[in-house]
Image (cartoon, rainbow, N blue to C red; front, top):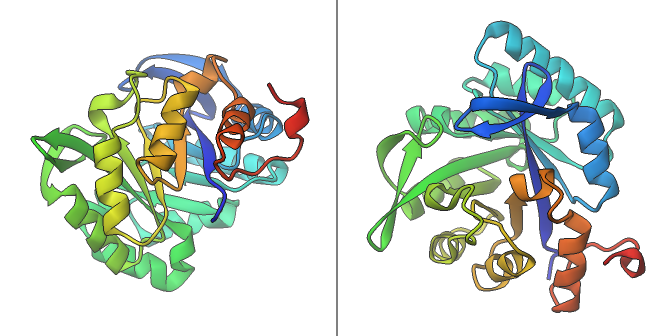
Length: 258
């Protein structure tokens, strides 16, 4: 069995990592390179950087940040946020990103996934899906979880895989920031329906939540943000716990972890 991955997520605004609520009341958390190196040192398997800058100048600053990150970071990292064209993807990969995440642009033009996969390889293309519960099913939302789409989540995940996505980043909108645990039903439904790796996002609050989503939910990786940024847990502490529960994870110095 492949090792399960633990992935911190960092929002970047005008070249700095920030923390806020729906992009409002942003507080600076630090430099994306230094924070990336910190997470690398404390056991992160990968990182996800999301560009939340709206201006053209902000985009240029983000590209410069990606170049600085790639020059120092040894672990893989994905970048996303506002990616809408093949040229956007090219710039980010040339700047040093390992993978690029697509969300709203793929919903608006699904053929973008095919174009990107054919040019860069599907291993570079991550389909980000924001999901909201509707009874026993889930609706896909676009525009940072603000607009409902006609797509049901499982159907869109299968369509995204068919069109070339090599991985799915699945966020439960209703759980995001709650620390009440990942949406296991959502995660299980998508993991059963696709053959590409699924990263679960939204709701991490305890070590046990990671165990649940990786084992019961079937996710290949678990992503978290605030929990890590505020120092409540580190990736290495989560992985040490998972290892003790028999979950395969990458451990470099497990005897040093607590």
